[in-house]
Length: 302
Image (cartoon, rainbow, N blue to C red; front, side):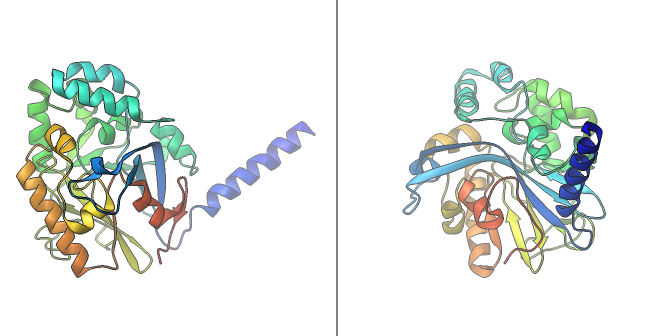
């Protein structure tokens, strides 16, 4: 009897996994590793409507018949200890960020919540190489794709760290791959990389937060979702083109003036393409607008 129950349970789990994996069209899944709330003023300079910043540290899993791609990976298991590798100001700020991430779970557990095994992830795309986006990649085995400018910046961080721990870079370095923007202009961006050549995932440069920061368009049914990484911290800041709050701007933007220009470019993009959903990496409300809830997969976005 016990054996029969085990078999039935296994079949139900397999059916659930299959149900989340439509064979006919790509889908995206929200994999959240932690969440927090803070004063809305921290989410951008000059915000009017965001009274509380519902923050998240999340990734997006895109899977279809071609492969399973993970965009951003959250913290790694050694995040607290790695803050000691940074100079004093960055160490204090980073430690506050890590300790403020409530109910933290690993990227492996987050993937399991959408029936995804680590071995099924065939490539990792990183919006930028900060510890809360790159750290979880140490728990996976897939190649990690970053922009050429980010490769150069990470090399400097190895010897003169300002925000990314050298041990994290050393851990992922053998798996780093350079993503060349060789697909031509895309929706007003001068350069892009169409990962599959069919518009499912298109990467564009968004420099400033780090030199090689990048955004990703994910096509879900008839609509696109634009994952902008940390080009803005909240949806209101992205849509209005507002710079980051002074504390976050000074501690995280490698080129603040360029970062401000990129954020304004995103606001211009939003006015030209209001039908495309913008998702800043740390705005939980923006994720909810697309996915509804964490650990949810969607194939069509209306």
